[in-house]
Length: 271
Image 1: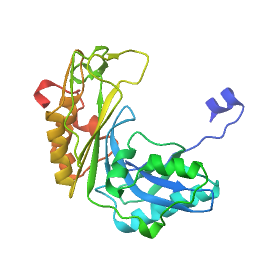
Image 2: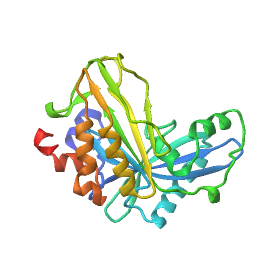
Image 3: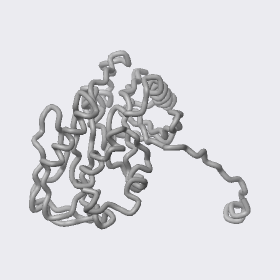
Image 4: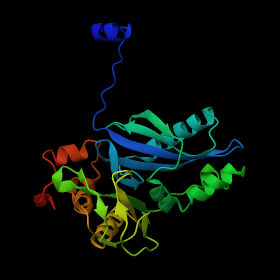
């Protein structure tokens, strides 16, 4: 209080609630200019490093239908309250007892939107464009159906064996898995491209879909195995270790997952 008073002339302080086993779970919303707003389920984004998402999935292995509905309805209520019109994401911190707390709203398309597309069968980019030109949403909340499971892994130009030090250079070899109905690759580079210090280090997003979470994980394992990058360091071995980890397979996730499971960093013995 004394420090706040001397620094800001205001002695008031905020005490934040401690959240046990926190998870980062977000709700995808869509709203148009005709008063319609819906939610498209959730994305589990708890696997993070330095607060940056590494692996995302939809749906969450933690939420039950009651909590999913409550979070979705709260997200839609927020969108309606600000007369929001587009695709957007309402992010929450979820505690061990499925109590949830508002974190922020991202008024844009998120990097991890493909997992929502794969479990809903909807094209969020198309829907955003249609809403932007004044069209009504072509579906209501009762039309939204989640089918199967989807997982996204972010392939970064970084060296996981050297404390994730950023890596730059030319992609001498870049081979990605074959895209199918259950495997999607989003990337903006090709063999011969340069990865510089001026942009985000993401090389690609690998997204897989399966009838069950286990199937989606196995497809992701195959997709990572089919990827080949040479010319700079990358995190594919780290991603493979994460999805193979027993705790990840069990769905026992939290935003502290990587720090707790790799307290001394990632090493060749972890592969």
